[in-house]
Length: 299
Image (cartoon, rainbow, N blue to C red; front, side, top):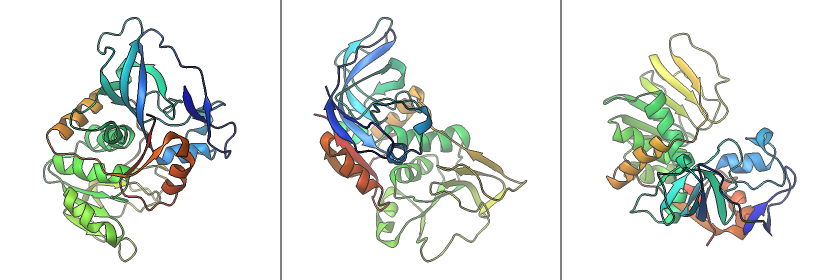
């Protein structure tokens, strides 16, 4: 099978041929149609991110959308021919930048029927991050106020919609050219972070997707979640402050599918590259100026 490998951190991403994997008991073999590209990918490539958990040769990538080709012994929930999507094995290597992956069957869910593989491949890591923050951790309720930084990015544009689906009032930060995009997604208020900061103390849930933000806007009893660099900020005794690291979550994927099918969640794909152009995809992502997600195609 074709796959993108690197042999050292900071080294080039190289297209090569690797043996097609075989599923172990409880695993499925998935023919990859599309693989989402996330900041953790290029951070790990450079020696940061999840680098400490990887071995060489390394096949990067965690977002997968594709078709089940074979099931291992004991798998009862999926069968060959099923269209699936998921974020298998994270934070250990999943090898999504390839034509095939194997992973535990319960790290996948049925792909939303209304999405292409490219769209579905853009969803798992970013959408699960937003879901696990806003639903599992914060349990956002009707009428609460949610602040999302980098709101037009991969996680951010999905977090805006998930918070709105929970009935929240959503404030997003982004450069001015992206404000119309965020308003179209349902953001109630958008702030150009290059011109001003949010200066009120009335936020119930603050999702910092940039890193290093002050928790000052969070009201007493509220929650500050630091992504991706954790919560090395000034502490406050009157609020919850939490880091988060996304994890494989079939139930979360199924809930995300329900939002997509119900019209409450849509994913924006900013750019699509062939597998052989993974390096170009990383270079674009590292500019920090993309809107939504970048996706690689493997077919």
